Length: 86
Image 1: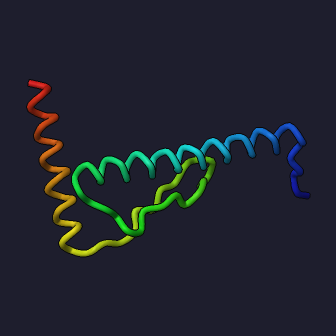
Image 2: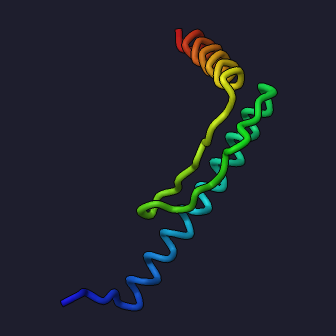
């Protein structure tokens, strides 16, 4: 015997899915903006929709040069944050 969701349960699930999708869209926008500040673009970055009522952002692939640039920017940012905490 399978369990059928009630109307209220389906509505709650849909709201969680919608919120997760919006969170993914916002995360993609935030990451694109941050990358743009560093002059970087991840060509395959996109919102992959909700997975288990959680947003899911697909970062995708990129060239070796872009991966190395991204690593440099992240390392520099991490070092800058570490210096602020002293």
